[in-house]
Length: 425
Image (cartoon, rainbow, N blue to C red; front, top):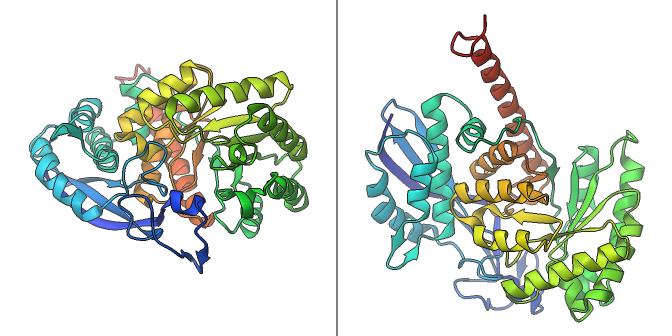
């Protein structure tokens, strides 16, 4: 099988791109939008519609493999790429990627994915979103060439030895952090609620009091609404560095605060993401490692997750080597090619840390489906229910994809075992 042509077209994402720097500086909501001017280069407004590009590989047998180029909600900060421009991306793909792929045989995933991910144009790699979407399509093409799921391609090409089964889903609330929790509990989300604690004064509280009250409320709401005592989700809050800001970056004070949150969360386990923003990768590694050690010294079971400044495969290797987190958020669009996501998830798990196959609300249904298959094949500790902030849609897209893929992989495995090639009698 080979690629006869490549088509790409701008499409919609499931949410918006937001100028995090402007929001942190105090930009106020104006309805669903934000008032004021953006401060991060590339943004036209503080909140703008997310953009994506769907890449379609036309195969010689008439099949079409596809993936979607998308970038994170908070682009241009924390060491990340600039905000994604779909029109410019289409031009780049047509100029540089299409000639590379047209006529190429599809005899696997890793080789072509590496070629796209490492392609240099005027001394730099393509935007991470382009590499993300094109390699999704290549993974899909490899699966179509073999007549199997993408998860099976990953399992076999990377020799993971991991059973392809659904993994826990992490569901995010957006700003509707109370009503959405009810949805999560009623649908028995595995990990919740994210919370979007991205502003010190209005969401965390100057002394952390607003988040503390919210953790207590979430705990009580689960106990009130759950229909089975066995339902015990993990509580995972993303605080966007606000805790560090509230306590002036003092690791000991931050650790005391987090340990208190852990007590409030009982009997549920607590994870807190991006607790301190240290302003650089090296600073983030040092701060996160120190905070993790401080929590253990207090006998606290609170886990910390890293996100910002941990964007590339190289970054992740450094955080893992330093033991600078309990949970590594492998933020899929930030890593460029999904081959990097696969390697990162396997690396994190191999070193005994929790590998979270995440991403952003600002993705598409297609990138969410591909991410779900990757998470399954790599045995991630959790996968983000995406795109969007509506709970229902993300849980449906990711959950349904995992259910289908597990069934298909199981059926393929049984067929192989029964065939003469598989060694059955």
